Structure formats: C-alpha cells, structure tokens
Length: 75
Image (tube, rainbow, N blue to C red; front, side, top):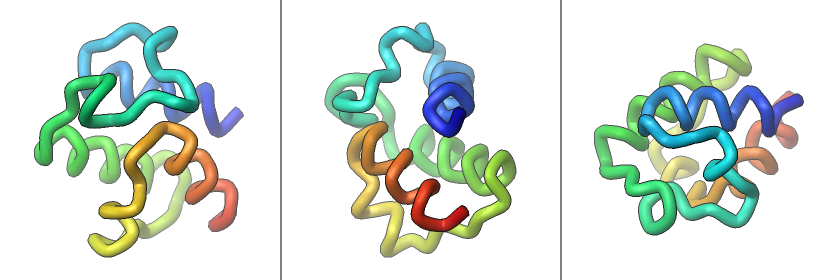
C-alpha cells in the first residue's frame, strides 16, 4: 500500500510512468529528479502519510526503497 501511494506521488511529480517507480530506482539517477522535484515529492509524502521529513532525513532518502522504509518506520 505504501509503495503504490509512493509510486503515484512520484509519477505525478516527475511525469514518469508508475511502472518506472520501482524499489531500486534512484530518484535522481533513474527517475531524473532535481532538487525542486525532490522537495515536491517530500511535500507530497508528508501530506499523504501524515509525517514530517527533516532536511537531514531527506538527504538519506536516495531510492524508492529508502522512502518506503522511512515511511514504514514512522507509521
């Protein structure tokens, strides 16, 4: 469930197909996200999952799997 919601948020923000948003995908290298894109993704995740993601934590979220693990640990 977390992965599906995350896939939709990332696909909407980056204009990619949800099938490209796989656990091993890097937001920057594989999905082409820049700093502004990452900011928008984080905002979407915070809103969707009701969590707060600090700037320090954002730096550690490099892949889709990192994001899933982060969200899972905070719910």
